[in-house]
Length: 67
Image 1 (cartoon, helix red, strand yellow):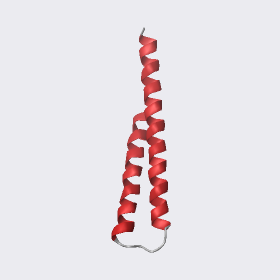
Image 2 (cartoon, rainbow, N blue to C red; image 1 turned 90 degrees about the horizontal axis):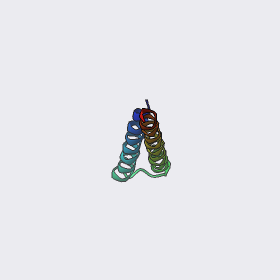
Image 3 (spheres, rainbow, N blue to C red; image 1 turned 135 degrees about the vertical axis):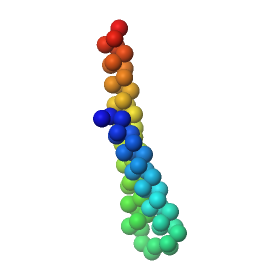
Image 4 (cartoon, rainbow, N blue to C red; image 1 turned 45 degrees about the horizontal axis):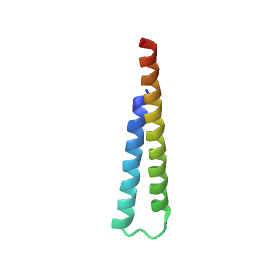
């Protein structure tokens, strides 16, 4: 389950970057799309880091139990 959190984080970052591109390409006036893209990128980074740390802790515990 922890592995999917990393993939979800990457997907959210990609969606946030796509919102940035949409904002620039379509010349949308206002900052709603820009700030939602920023929030998605930051949230995706947090999810990815949490998933990475959870996966590393899980693998460390498995190696420790085998010894």
